Length: 307
Image 1 (cartoon, helix red, strand yellow):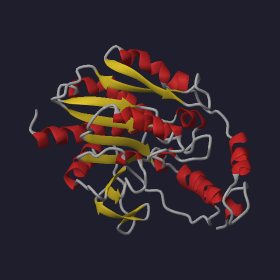
Image 2 (cartoon, helix red, strand yellow):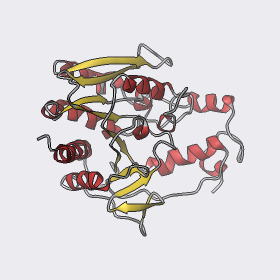
Image 3 (cartoon, helix red, strand yellow):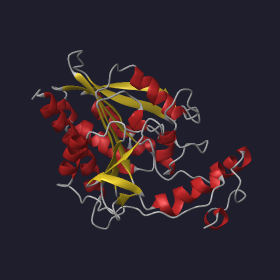
Image 4 (cartoon, helix red, strand yellow):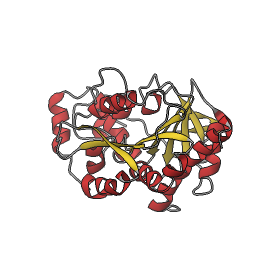
């Protein structure tokens, strides 16, 4: 399928220039409120956790401040756990699952761990229901030094302040719009031909091919399976990647500059909830994200024998 057939901006076979990126930005609209849907929940959390303002998006600094939360009983004797959500702003349960974890579970686990949660890394993307930032950059391919994505650069600076991170769980979704909108858009931006893929019907994980930790991944899958269905493989693959085990594929997360690769951790994973299934609700999607976090933390408690 040609670029022209799937997205009208640009010349087929040629990457976008700055004028074409500006043309794309001009047609992006606000669809929901970061202030009303996300930041409004922070006040209640600040009583229990330390709220950290780690930056703001220069696109509109007053409208898009960046926040994270840390457990108050921080201790050098505890391992540090990082939870991130909303790297891709359109992936709703990543944001609200992180907030729900803070609201319902983080205080309990703070007896075992230092916990830092950045629930909405890309607030402009949240409001516009977008994978990219205003510069047509994907923050989740931009976690490297001198990043052109300020969402990614700001998070990396915050994470550097935490010291050693023992485990990192990055909350995402795979939605039907990945195929009908965002992958065609990426092909148009890069001047490449679009090739259709398959969206897995269910939850799955993306582990780290350089540090696969299969038992950790399985513990998360087992926990989430109590909430929602796990994606069956498509002839031994998910999103055209060979499965490592049921519900799990592995990526070279550092090489691809993904959020899950920003620290030298012992355990990391990226969740992928499927919110477009007719068999799930928004609540179940959020619950699945929380189950992924707690399933991973329960495994680590057992692994370290600290319970």
